[in-house]
Structures are given as C-alpha cells and as structure tokens.
Amino acid sequence: MEFQRPDHWGPIEDSLNALSGPYGLDYWREKDERHEFPTELWHALGEQGWMGVSIPSEYGGEGMSFLDTVFVVETACRGGGGSTLSQLFMATPVFGGETIRRHGSDELKRTLLPGIADGSVDFCMALTEPDAGSDTFATTTNAVKNGNGSYVVNGQKVWITAVPEADYILTIARTTRAADAPSRSRGLSLFVIDRDAPGVTHAPLPKVGTHCISASSVYFDDVEVPEDRLIGEPDMGWRHLVDTLNTERLVTAAGCLATADLALKIASQYASERVVFGRPIGSNQGIQFPLAELKMRVEAARLLTYKAAWLKDAGRPGADLKQAAAIAKLYSTEAAVSATRVATQVFGGNGFMEEFPVARFYRDAKVLEIGEGTSEVQRLVIARGLGLPVT
Image (cartoon, rainbow, N blue to C red; front, side, top):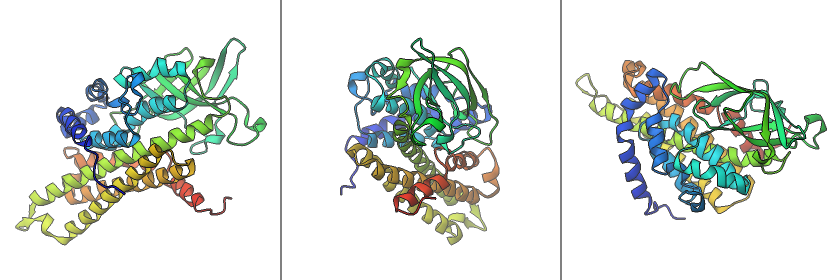
C-alpha cells in the first residue's frame, strides 16, 4: 500500500485553487439566491480541460486515471460549490464522457468526446421515471425501430439534472418489452438523444435545494433517434448502465467528501472566532468532540472513495467495484449530511441564515442521500455482496 499523494496532484490542486478563487462561497451564494446556473465557473473548468481528465489524448483529453478525476472533482468542489458542483461533473464527464469512452462506437467517440474534453459539449442523463424510481427494470420509456434506420422513443423521465444546459441526453429505454425479455435486466438500451430533437420537451421541478442547478421532467413524444446513437448492443443497456452508475457514485462520493471537508473547515474557523461567555465556543468539548468526529469521517470517506477509484482503474471484477462504489457513496453522502448538520449547529442561529454558507450546504447535501441510488439501495447492494438471501 502507498498512501503518499502522487506528485502531479500538487500542480492539479494549485491550478484548481487558482481557477476557483473568483468562484468561492460568495459566488455560490449569489447563484443560489438567483437560481442561476454557474455558467462562468463551468465554462472556465471546461476551457482548462478539467472535463477531459480521463478521456484519452487521441480525443483531446488528458488520458489520466479515474483516481485523478476523483481528485479533480474533490478539489474543484471544495472551492465553494461542494456537492452541488459534483452533480455537473456527473452529468458531462461521467454520463457523457465515461459512458461513451467505455461503451460507445468509434464514431460516437470521434464525434462527441473532443467536445466533452474541451467543455463545448454538455450532457445530462434521463434514467428515473415517475412510476419506477430506483427500479430501473420497471422502465416504461420505449424505443421501437421504424424501419428507416431510426428508433422512435416515447416516454417520460423525472428529476433529470441540468437539462436546459445539456446538448445531449443519455437515455435508457426499453427496446424489448419486459414481458418478452429473457430476464429483467435484458431489453433495455442506452441512447444519445439531442436535447433539441423534435418531440423532446422538458419542464423544471420545484425543489428544496441546489437552486442553481435545475431538475426537470423530460418528455419524449415520437422522438426519432438514429441507430448509430445507440450505445453498445441493443437490449444490453443495463450492463453498460451499471458501469456508468458505479462511476457516478464515485463522483458523488468525491463531491460529498469535499462538502464534508469544507463544512468542517468553516465550522472549525467559526468556532475559533466566535466568543460567547468570554471565550471561543471552540474551547468547549460540546463543540470540539463533534468536530473531531467529523474529522475522522472525512478521512474515512477519502480513503473509501480513493480505494474505489483505484479498483476501477485496476480493472477489478465488477462485483468488487460495485461493492466499493456503494460503500464510498453511502459513507460519503451520510458524512456530508452529518457534517453540514453539525456545522449548522456550531453556527447556532447564524447557521439558519442564508448569509452563511452552512445553510446552503445543509439543504444541498441531503439530495445526494437520495439521488444516484438512495442510501437504502446502497445498503442493499452491500448486503447482497455479503451473500445474504435475495427475496
């Protein structure tokens, strides 16, 4: 085992810290208040190549490891965006970049990866449905061949992140009816659909947090999708999707790790400066002990997340990565929610004011215990990895 950071992470950290400087806590507070997308920061990240860290150099990327990508996400999110910014890294570098890099045709790679790498192309993913939720096998959105070299897609998706900013929607649809498929996991296919294709419409959903990144319902009404926009083999989309979801969970974990770390830093600083009853509140064990507990959780979350990313890079069996990704995602998201709750408590009444960042951290972190696979789903994945009975 080697726990020393790679030498090239130092320059990466310096570059990202310099880039994030103008886009710190005040920037994110203003964007949140105005419900505005963080366009300036997102474009800056793309222009400097941070979307293409793991994309091969032949397609304009850096050709680095996925562990490097996780470190980039963690560092960028710690600049002020926290887990909110990590949702954008899921959308384009993972849903678009990783899915196409690993499972797309040569034509899709040549057409789309360079734009993802330079930040000129953005993605979102349409997976969740109103009546399916976590049960992807219950997907009813369907894609039927029309005999003219295209599929026709019909259906509805819900809670889809960053649709207005996306150029393409990675979409899962049934190409074989569930009743006719040889197993529940067969009959699903992945498609790359133009967001502005005729028949695609979307509408925003009201929500509690992450106000600067929208969530939308997406409707597909007789949308024609060329056959060459199919990812991998028809009816085998679940196999490709599992790989994407494992990767998504690692990016989620990295963003939540950053949120927990940032909340801990801000709370510790406030506890050192805030004077009550003639002394800093940080001198009281009632403040010290919860922050010490958070420090342990941050360090554990970092190790779990880095280990899972290493397993992905090492090409370890899918079951190993699935378990490690579920553990990292579950632990890091719950650590982030715990960290933001404790930080809010340390700030006292100030923690309930939008003027201070912990209020935003608190409401924004919660969604990632639900999205990208709920905490209950992650526990189910972990339990099944123990060989426990499946009902």
